[in-house]
Image (cartoon, rainbow, N blue to C red):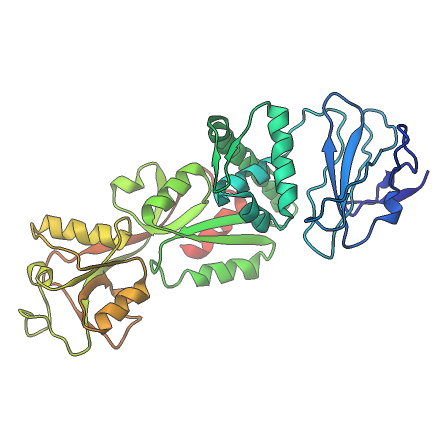
Length: 388
């Protein structure tokens, strides 16, 4: 009986050159080449394994593969790596077909978060068909579908809605277990997902660069979103920590560390002085409300702070423009189509525009790093040390 070696270790791969049912079997030693993807599918209630082999993931060329007999506890692996393209999600044949592994959970979570199988495959760097087969295999094990599939979208079923948070928690626990072992060995690895809002902290790149220099084994992912979405992500556990501006109510249930407190200013076109401005260029909220206003969309922390300040001063106003991009807001102001209220640190990025301080009731925000309460995983703690 010939043997080969898995790309995942030095353990030999046992194969048959003939099959019990008379079908032609495949010798893995003759298909271990870059352009071939091997996917294995566990057949329920049997001791055998059916495998699909394709030279191109888009082709439908299949041949049956029969593994050699084995006893429980053995690990007959049916792997074929694909160094020339995207790897497949080949799995070890198990003595029990009911086992659920972390990789299956990771795939389901990726599909749920990315909103589709193709996007999940790109995120995981695997072929799309491998993602689909992994999800189907897990659904068979669980006895229920996790996703509703249509031609236009993929959405979670009630069972999927219950499964994904538990899977996320399991993946986080496994990652933390690996991290503490690495830390005990004097190494630090793992992943940190950081949430942030556009323009909230100009110096965010500094702690990220410092972390990479100190711990190159830690992978950092950055997710930019509105403050309401980031807070939800913190609750769901899809973000480990965030640099945001939250009001007191939004801080509930989170551990916070203040990074900066900053007033906001009124930004106008070059040479444009708002009517009613004092000799020092200061303006009132009432005077600003009479001008065409460039606002950020609801949900942005800047918008929340501006709305709160105008309400506190009992001044009504209307938005002429609503944008979700700082550069777009600056272009509208530069064209003298309106004025915009923004934090000083952001206004400083556009030195050609004029800025005017408010004489009182100036909008402000507190920039802070926030995280779920409790002990932070080692990789997250390392990044926090560079932030505060």
